[in-house]
Amino acid sequence: MTRAAFTRLVKTRSDGAAVPLIIVDNQPTHVRRIAALQAGADDVVASPLKEAPFLARIRCLLRARDTVQSLRLHETAASIPGLAEDALGFDAPSSVVFAAPHRADAVNWSARLKLLAPYRMRAFPIGDMVRSMSLYAVPDAFVIGVAADSPDDSLRLLAEIRARVHTAGRCADGFGPRR
Image 1: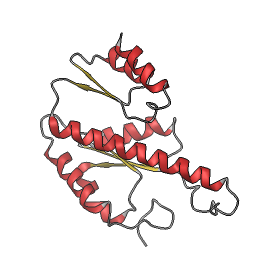
Image 2 (image 1 turned 30 degrees about the vertical axis):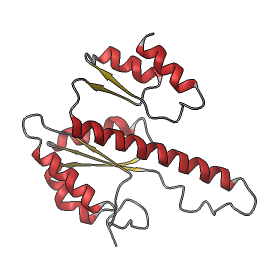
Image 3 (image 1 turned 135 degrees about the vertical axis):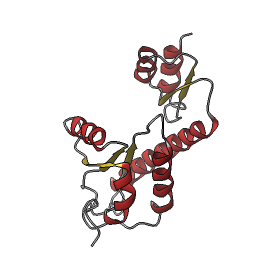
């Protein structure tokens, strides 16, 4: 059985559809990666595995699954008379921050994706992102570029995000400077 057939089999079963599926591939070429993702895999990682990034990816996929399940529960509750919440405040588009070692990269990613997604997007060089985190509301997602020759700035940003995300408040519009 091929990886793609296995992935489709797992993802089409009712008891496997919500399970995050990571394909471990010893030769994750672009074509193989795309085939696995199109078949339903949530991610493809290279073997041999690096323990810390792999565990972080698993945690991320589990959080994403929990969020989807929570949203489905909200939708179900909203359809039951007496349990529906006012939709006000749920209509704001998601916000994404792009941070890269070079501002041009972050701006390029943001510009290219803005054509495809209705998100509010901001782009920063990593150094500016660390300095300006307290000026902006916590975004819904971070995309962080890592320079292969000097990943330290990206790792510091990630540590800063993790230290602040749970305690930082959101502003009224969800993505502007704090008031």
